[in-house]
Image (cartoon, rainbow, N blue to C red):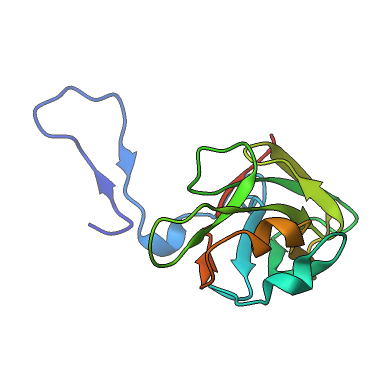
Length: 168
């Protein structure tokens, strides 16, 4: 019946219905279907180790790199994404916890490049360009040497959770 005319059985029809084969369908009467932009977001390392002393006072240590690629974006258009950083503590600041035992945590500040990140507050990364790898370093700093000296020695860890949302 491909490409032929078909009379609908049992129904009084004023005309015929054309049955088309697959190759007869057009893609769109108004051009190609638009493809919306999407974002490929990645972090360079799943985990990072560093010496606490490298982040004492005003010193900062890079612990990771956030990467965003805008796919199917329009050249000349800036895009943005929102990042919210949290950790497992109930404290308002970020904290490192002893890997073994239950000692007191060590407070630290988190930075995206040189901008301090408030825990739980959305940070908008704007100016994202399509077809390039947009990168920002994630850094830790402002660890108190005095606070560290008063803690139990050992390995301290933190798990940073990053929630990424579209600001639109």
